[in-house]
Image: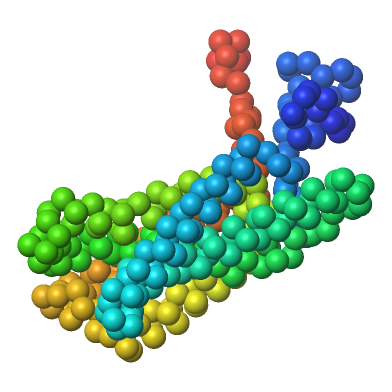
Length: 292
């Protein structure tokens, strides 16, 4: 057994091979990537990905905050604002993106000073806690609202049509797209911009990944229980009966959980580990067939 470090530019894996001499094409080689651990510091060198990610975070977080404040003012103290689950998700997104923008700027400044002063950078504990506490719950909220609304609008299209005479059809459909359909796209772009960070966060054992999902589900369950105890979703969204309400709720929960599990698995060490090639235990060659 030999262990060799890949020397090619940009290559970040070790080569494990079974060979007695120099490696050639006949050797069995398995490449195992160096998986980062959550205890490793999240660093913020000023790359194009970080700049674009920060720009998106500031722009989208600012827009979310302005719309939330505008809705609160227009709806007379927020009584009409808090009765919609969409607005709960909108507020959670605004809080998440605003905090993330602040922490990203702080981390970039701290990393820049550390490099300038030639000091050893430390683990960004604040950013790690931010991801651990808020990323998955917000992802679940955005996903659940998107898929749950499909059933709601199918059975209660009057939620949109009742605004046609007030603001017009075009503005109604445009506002519905901004509120319900654009957030998942923006959150997906945000996830792409922080993929390297999330690989640190999800560098856990299977138990750690399960616990992260369970913790996010507990947060979502508490928020949903508070919402249902304060308002009746069927009455708020004009749903015809209990079965439709359960169907919308099931779509919300199932989609949020499935998308979260998918993202966690993709960004975990299991998603980063290369799959080995199948080994042929018996070669059915012409000579082998003749010897039988």
